[in-house]
Image (tube, rainbow, N blue to C red; front, side, top):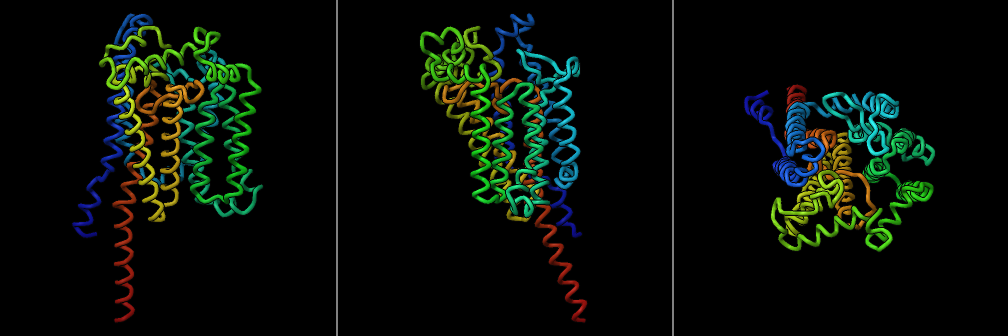
Length: 399
């Protein structure tokens, strides 16, 4: 290898837009959390900066892990696809076992490791993406050959969905299912199969809603949130979120000057942090957040497409999966905060409070950065090397 190639290999190339947007969202989340959580932290822990300090630690931990993850070759992730899915199954079962799984508000979604709580659904999102990317790369022709093969390939997804619904966690189930559907579509599944796949998922979602009293109640609340029979009961949270956006108008009431976070808006520091942002930074701040997530999705999609053009199939599918996951989750959270979608406990990636979400999202961004690096640096060098080897072989035969 020549000196120029060694220097190029040593030069670590990232996507500056992807990394820049991710850091901006992470920093903005910590700032808004500092504003939104002071009162509730003071009341619950007698420490106003309880949530801010923890979120800062999670952010640093996420960046620290990302520093090492970005150096892991995508081929390693491909080899680990099946073990990671197996680990995911073990964790999903473990979280349902009394004494291991931690119950919060009637849901078993966390495993308490003492120093931190692991939300298994956040980790399983990444494991599912890696597994199906490896699966589609190896057995795509078999999957697309018949409908029965397609159904068999989705059995792991059905098992994961069933375990998540036992927690229960419909939001994570919907995000994971939507991500896998998108991956199959972008991988080139037959249009007829895709329509059937999408239709079955939609029917399943509707069935889950109408066969569960509390889910049906949430739907009714969404449709009538601010009407007299709901606005002081089930619709209270959504109404307070809409009031926050209304108070913010165009430019907001000022950072730290919002009142909805003062025990008017429940979960202001987690799922409804965007509403606090809308009140304090106004429509301009909300639009900025939407633009940042749009740019994040666009850059992730471009990275995946670039890998696809270089025939790095596994990497491209992982990139597409991460782009769909983050884009879909952000879309749902924003829609819930604005009253466009029914209330659901889904965090805003990199922004909302939550250690598992922040750390796993940082790992996903690091993987995207690695994909960009391999498609930008490694692939061209390998192509040049192959061309040189062909030329040397040709010259040897000619002599």
